[in-house]
Length: 109
Image (cartoon, rainbow, N blue to C red; front, side, top):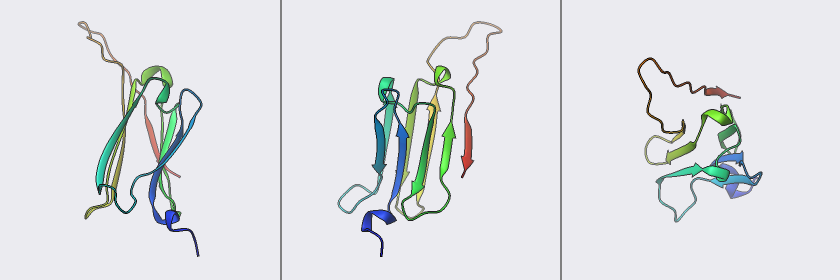
């Protein structure tokens, strides 16, 4: 039989500073809902994923590093089990006719 941590939801990524992040989102004694934001060298390096340690599909989010300034995850294990991965561009004021492009691919793998 697997380790008890194998049945936990998690997120994982390699950060801009090349450190590895592998975070279990819920464990006994922790809040049943929370969120976290990563910026600068600690944000994902173009890809991150949410998954269940017991297996099944992984939600993978890929994005161009030069378009993303902040990555945000929120989760809950109350009622509906839910994990949200979101990315934000750098904040800037657009002039008339200017556009901002933010490409983000979400896939189940």
